[in-house]
Length: 436
Ligand SMILES: *Cc1c(COP(=O)(O)O)cnc(C)c1O
Image 1 (cartoon, rainbow, N blue to C red):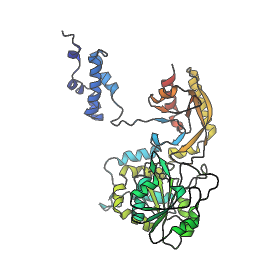
Image 2 (tube, protein in one colour):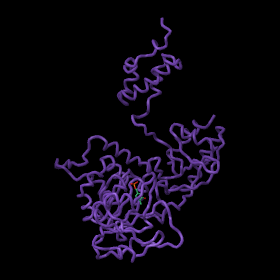
Image 3 (tube, rainbow, N blue to C red):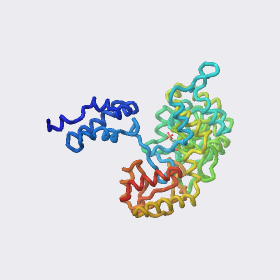
Image 4 (spheres, rainbow, N blue to C red):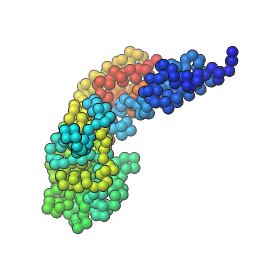
């Protein structure tokens, strides 16, 4: 009998035909399973694994899904965390996505058998959530909404915008550069810290395509400052025929008592904006999307523009958006209103379990944040579990990975960005990563 380990390495075809591996091929596809087989064969060849253990080793090596994106527990205290996928979808939205993922009636009227309006139910849900909107459309994200508006209303014309609202949203995404890339000219008014109604009205002329207000989502200007609110600007523009477009960034449907300074879709339109733009995956708590609501004639102009076709969303986004609007309160807004006494109790429970397992842990008060460019100066009272700093990397390497943050030499796991139904998964993941 040969002692050459290469002769004993199970063949790829043999493993692919194994009764336990065949279902994995059906679930994940041959490519991923063959990758796992190759890894295991190398371990056997290197003498690190007995050949008889090949099948269980391949099964252990397989990814959970055919995509590399993994679920992560967000204990950063940042409710809308861009690096963690922004708003987590509600259970209702996830179910709607799954239902719409196959063949679906997104553009078919099943009653008549004829073509129907695309995503009509999601648009109706938006109008119902924002009664001041005559009409709505949905595009890929808020940046796409801005690009569409700037192209349709501003190409070859001027967009009037305050200097203090020439915002960089994050990671090099600068709104003025996006606007200019569409062929619109920016007519900047006011100074960095101050702008008046007269600054705007003086800038109006035959070339004006629109007046644009952009919410400075991720910073505040303090001191000798002045801005013109939507209401004041709308009054000044009345009768000029110049549309007032407001990009509020975060898409709260209406005013929210936890965030009194945050603009919302309904109030912005009621105050006189002709169009309001927002993201779907910030405080609205839904899928990535750009929402455009307001005057029916302007929305129609955008919908008819050739660029709209390149920016429209798919059936799963429409499904998730509708379920977010019509279904139970989405996770982000549940987190926003979580009671701090409950957060403290949850932190105490988790800390006690960790201490009982010999971990250096304590429940502490903390400050959470909205994130995603919302309410930058508005800390949310919260509670966290404090652990030794060096646990941060171990927690990120865990299963599922847990992402906290490091402050003053301790790793903090903030519970406001974790839903209570995920506490058990969090405890299990933390114990597995750091106990013993
Ligand atoms: C976040 C934000 C955007 C960009 O939104 P996306 O949906 O990420 O494209 C645009 N404008 C403002 C004011 C924002 O806060």
